[in-house]
Amino acid sequence: MLPLPRLTPAWVIPETEDGTTGSADDFVRRLNDRRWSVAILGSDILSPGQDLAFLDLEADCRPADHELPPVFEAAKKYGIPLLLRGSASHSAIRDLRPQPVLPERLFQWWGPERMDEELIRNVPPLTITRVTAGARWAMVETEETVGLAAMPLLASGSAPDAPVTLREDYVGAPLSALAGGLRMAAGIERSLACAAANAGHRPPVAGTVSDGLLPEPGAGTERTVIVGRFPELARKRPGAIVLEKHPGPDDLPSDAAPYVIPGAEHFVVTASAWSNGTLAGLLRLATGSRVTLVGPGAPLAPALHAYGIHRLAGFIVGDREKTREIIAEGGGVKAFKPYGRQIMLSEE
Image (cartoon, rainbow, N blue to C red; front, side):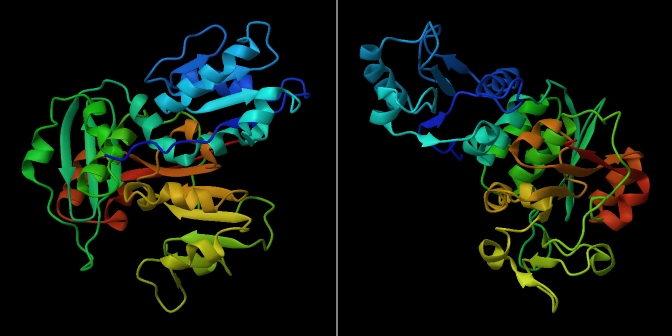
C-alpha cells in the first residue's frame, strides 16, 4: 500500500486581500469539510493520526514562543504536515525555514498524491450490487449509481484476468471497501477501486455536453500537450503534442513527458492515467497549465478542481445492462458510448 508522501513544513504569508478563496483559513476549512483531520494549534492538541497541523503565529490563542520547539518536534515525530501563517520576522519562520507557499497554491503544496485518499474518505456507504471486469474496462454498480474505469493493459494490449473472488467478494460490501484499492500503485485492484470511487458520485445535475477534447472558448494557438491518442485529435486539437505509451508516427513516447508538459498552456490527460497510478506525477509536471481530465473513467468530482484539474470530462451510463454486457465481452468506449452521455464539469 502506498503511504502518503511527507510534506516539508510550509509558510503562507498573512493574506491582505479581503475574502480571497485561496486563504489559509479557507484551505483549512475545506480540508475539514473533506474529512481530513486538522489540528489548529493553540486550540487543539496535536496527536498521532492527524493529517495537518495549522499554526497561526499571529493569533491570540497561539502557543507561546517557548512552547513551539516541542510542537514542531511532535509534528515531525508523528509525520504530520505543518502549515504556518505569520510574518517572516517571527522567530519560528527564521528557525524552521519552512517552504514559502502562496495562498492560492496551498493545494499544490498539499499535493495531487493526496487526491486519491480524499476520494476514498468521501465515498458514501452505498452497497455494491455488481462488479464487472472486462478486458478493457471495469464497472462497479450500486442500486443508485454506477462507475467505470480503464483496466490495466499488458504488453499484448489485453488486460490480465481479474480473479473471480476479487469481483464476488465485494458484492454486498460498501463502496469504500473497494475504493480503498486506490492506495495501490497500479493493477486490477486499483482499476476496480477507481470504478468504485466513480460510483460514489451521483450524476451531476449541471454540466456541459462535451468530451473535453475541443479547445476552450477563446483559446488560440497556445501550446497543448495531450496524454493519449484520442480519435480525431488532428481535427479537434491541431498542432497538439501527443504522448503515447505505444507511440504512433505522430506521437512522442510517454517517457518524454518531463520534457514537453512543463510550460504547456493546456494539458489534456486521459483518465486512464488515474487508473494506472501515473496521474499525480503528470499533474506535478503540469503546474500552471489548464488541465482537462477526459474519458469515461474521469471522476465527476468537483473537489478535484482544487488539485489543479480545471475540467473533468466524464461519462454517465444510461443503459446499465447494455454497457455491462459490452464491458464483460471486452468492448471499448466506441461500443458502449451510445448507451450513455458525455458530460464536462468546469471549475468556473
